[in-house]
Amino acid sequence: MPIISVIIGVIILLVLMMPLKLNAFVSLIIAALAVGLLEGMTPLEAMESIEAGLGSTLGHLTMIIIFGAILGRLMIDSGGAQRIATTMIHAFGEKRIQLAAVITAATVGIALFFETGVVVLVPLVFTIATAAGVPVLYIGMPVIAALITMHGFVPPHPGPTAIAGVFGANIGLTMIYGIIIAIPSFLIAGPVYTKLFKKESLEIEIPKGLFNPKEFKESELPSFGISILTALMPVILIALQAFVEIFAPDSVISSVTDFIGNANVALLLSVLFAIFTFGLRVGKKMPEIMKSLSDSVSGIAMILLIIAAGGAFKQVLVDSHIDQYISDIMAGSTLSPLFLTWLIAAILRISVGSATVAGMTAAGIAAPLVAATGVSPELMVLAAGAGSVTFSHVNDAGFWIYKEYFNLSILQTIKTWSVQVTIISIVGLIGVLVLNMFL
Image 1 (cartoon, rainbow, N blue to C red):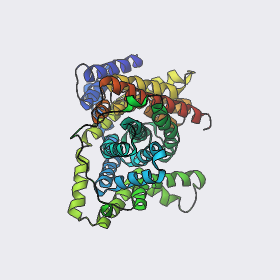
Image 2 (cartoon, rainbow, N blue to C red):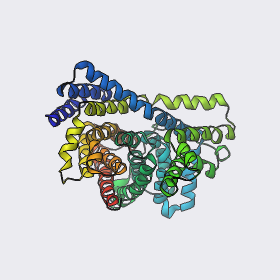
Image 3 (cartoon, one colour):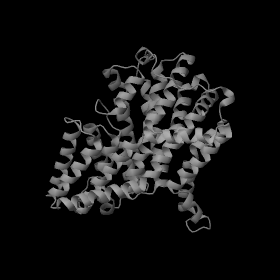
Image 4 (tube, one colour):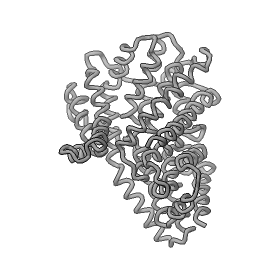
């Protein structure tokens, strides 16, 4: 029975990644191969299916992920991220310091990977908290909430972008819906959730020697306008394409916006723009700028491989016709495909730790539900994304990043980080279900 093959494949994946601690990429390839063999494929057919899935997924996402990493690195190395943060804080004032930090993190988080955002913003969190005389986690928790929410919900981040490819979702609409759902998610999980803690429980001892961020002089920083425009350039281009597609699909400019709003093109144009605004315009030479580009790519190789392996797993499900079997089962089901997708991703997230693996695997399993039920593919992306950020614990790298940067015990990390991301996940699911009532 096909559903048994999927269950066995997921169990193999969990065993390889949890007790045996095998790398996620290798584990996904082995699990995909096992499912193919269980469904009657020859070993060669299963491997050809895996190869096709790897190639198609990488072909779709490689430029997006690389250009996204480059844009983030240029923002850091130029001081653009620092300029956005300090300007927002000064504009909002000390009384609204928490809100300023959240908006800054959400804005910067559109362009930066979660791990990169932590490295950029946590030193600023320490500085802000000390200057304002508030507990570090009073600022830190909302900042982290905004970063992880944008990372999980909003393209062009690799997770939601990859999942959008599996579901055949429109990137522009996914981004717009994702931002709509992300805002209440990180506000509730950040500023609202911190109010449940006593002040002393949000105090931490700032780790010594953990950070060595470059402090830019005022004269070295790019302007706020240029910094925010460059950071949001991919969002502007992609959103423009979505706007024209909705309100003027047959207009003269639609062919232009279709091109520049393509995620690959939008990020390429944004990188070229950033090379000027964050590089040449502030006096940097091309060799120095190109070093930033080279450095940015070194940290994303494993992200690319895991996403590609998730695509390979999905392709095996398609080529062995398990997708059609799942589609036939769900055709007469009353269970919401959005809730089912969220639940699959959440179970995988808790089990294997990796949000990328959870989201991609859930998308591969649930992909046929789009055709079977007529549900919005964009909302399916967000349901998988919401499920993939739920309860993070000791098997997730993000758990340890948060723990070490804020110098917390495991229990403190669970009470803050683990609960926080679960709130984001649940509020995200509620947002998806509410939006589904109007689409």
